[in-house]
Amino acid sequence: MRSDLAVIMTTLAIYLAVTVSPGPNFAVVSRLAVSGSRQAAFGASVGIGLASIIYAALSMAGLAVLLKEIAWLARSVQIVGGCYLIYLGVNAWIGAGSLAQTAGAAATRGGWYGLRTGFLVDLSNPKSIAFFIGLYAAVVPLETALWAKVSIIAGCFVVETLWYALVAAMFSTPAALAVYRRLGKWMERTIGVCLAAFGIRMIYDRP
Image 1 (cartoon, rainbow, N blue to C red):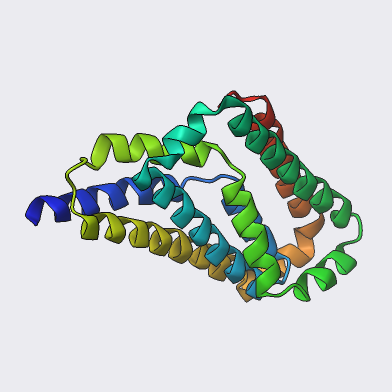
Image 2: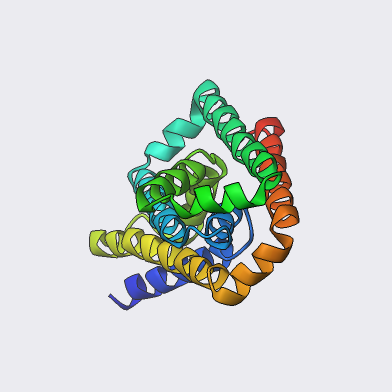
């Protein structure tokens, strides 16, 4: 049991270190929060957590390895995911041209919109498959108990959801919103460029 507990703690510690690194998920959640849609930002954090459950479960079951071996399918997912990020980036850039309308529209977006957006952004990133496969191959032995594997999957959901909920909370504070009202146009465009750049990189990178 002690070794299983060590596996859980080690896996989740590595997972946390990777989760807090800035990427498409961070850009999406922070944009939703800072543009006045706190509920959507919290929804996105749950959506990201749900996507992590899927990839973690697939990796535990060995199905992710099979998916990675099907080159055309992995490549298709990569292209679709990249196009979706570019779409979000272009929307952010265009919306920045009319800041008042952008903020007003964002404020009306609910938790379901955020959940769907976060889920699709995280699920459409095939790099997650490679990460989970590499993580579990290196850290989780085959003889690890089932309860420990289930605990790791649940832990991944908790880590993802809590971290991005914290990001949503920080970027939706009055101070953050005040900064957004002053610099929102350029913040939207910067985030839009980042999202589009992530998308382009995803399309041209090989799985």
